[in-house]
Length: 536
Image (cartoon, rainbow, N blue to C red; front, side, top):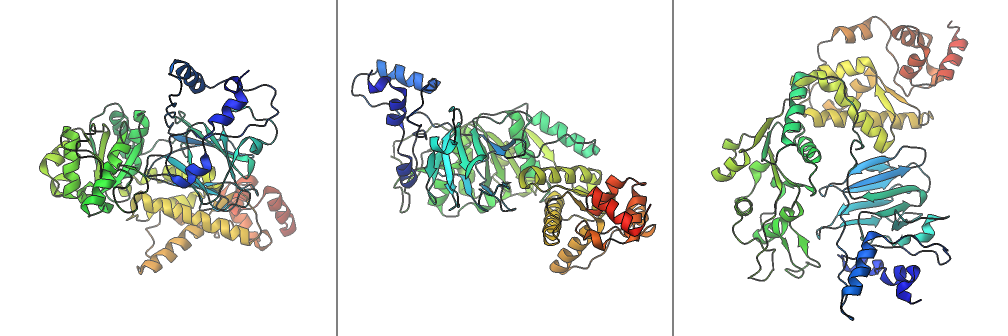
């Protein structure tokens, strides 16, 4: 039997030099792993291996094999010990940090994972790359479909720190050990996206917005989204792309941050070849071509520079030179094809865009986003969505009391949904930190009205504005006048007074489980405190 017929020898001979790839930059070679030498039963060949072998037989002797096509991942499957699997969609405009630190994109609580263990990002050459951030127990790269036996790290490559490792669909990344793992997926599984959950019935404005999204997802016409800053324009664009089930990427082009230099703008939009200018160590794929087959989202389109408007018109009309910067003069690239979604705070006629471009942006659907003031009844749903995302990604288990939610519905939100989301995240993070200081551990947090008021007051003072509480609703006034204030969830159990416990019990009609949640303590702790205080 020759080495070409030996599966183990074949894997070793075809394994690409990943360490060199990490130094040199882009590569179309697939990442691989080192199998244990004593496996008695080799795995069945992958379809790509069968095709490669057939091509090898048909190819003339001595002709080099072309590298396999890069398999771009579209989502991650995150596996953490003791938790259900988490599906995270991948977007080229984002980077994803993994670690124990609360500010990580996905938090791993296992001790083998460092505070900032690794980062996944989309490189200029249209490749997803993983970089180990000098973690204590290292990162390991392997193949998800390989039949591991024993310690999985023995089948994987050690990923040297501070180097970019090109990864693709089908790869597996171990963070420290096999209990914390990330699998790169070729598609986003239906109904399993992080943060998604069934919603209760909301406002009429929310229902109309949902219908508009579903309509836009069923056609390929351009979409223009008009709304105030913070109303969720990027989120709506992502939803349209996701529900459209396009094969390509969702690419965000922030028009207000595009370079003013003509060459740099050309590189940003159409890409450049290796060596096109000083520092161009490898070729770059322009944003227009990254979006090929997917969706191009023009955020803050009112700031699109005139030169970029010309490029975009050329693409939409299929005319002009679309070659990357530094390419040969006779090179003619076919125009990319993408779904076009644009967004602005200003109506198109007032933006100063070229009239012919403005007409093209509005030839399909137009979605006018309602303000948060127009949909206050949706605030509880939005808060639950934010809390669910915090629980699945950051492992913060928290909920707001009914009077705290009522208060959030009453105050003004000049920053719209974005301000509401940052408020929820900040209040929960503050309560978790206070709970850790008080030694209460990772118990479920109940966010009280007092905690919300304290945060908003501090923030308003930081802005230099006066704190004017909203007109009290019947629910809020009843909670603040009919019974003593409920303590914040981080108060020590031994500091709870008889009046505070009786107030919690009265609020929940004697239900001790809900009263304990309200007080931020365990049920047995509440019962023990009640016995000590002589509360029947």
